[in-house]
Length: 192
Image (cartoon, rainbow, N blue to C red):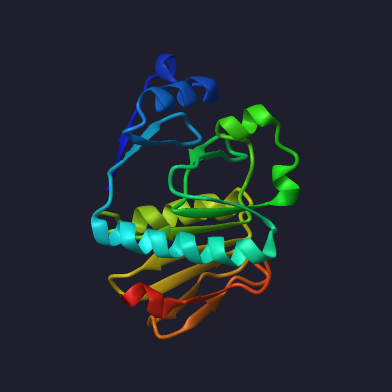
């Protein structure tokens, strides 16, 4: 579940001010949309957290060998080209993009669009709001994004300039190609 906090023009936060707000309130999960509105994200339940851990671990283990970039967990925010500050459950950023960021940007919400994101629907999440967030990721330049819905055992696969593909059933593997070369996720891992 998320709550939008609408602000008057006089109360809009710059990216620097927003980072300061987040740093002063680490117990809150905040995002900022392209209009400067603050989005308060509620914590997830334990089952969602377990699944999040599995997803992060799988991408991390693939990258441990591939060494193609870095993985962000749900605490890692990025500033997208539209000015919004967003965090995915799991995000992969290539070394090529990371090497263009300053040390200061790496310490804050760096201006970078991930190469790959995973959003995991928790019990409190609205599917419509998550689909809108996926559109934001792809519109801003994420070439591959997965929206995983454990309740319905579905994965919505978003690719730039392509229709969304829906994989039904967690008895399958899904491929991270061509973005995550050699990566496949065994969806059965999400059934435990």
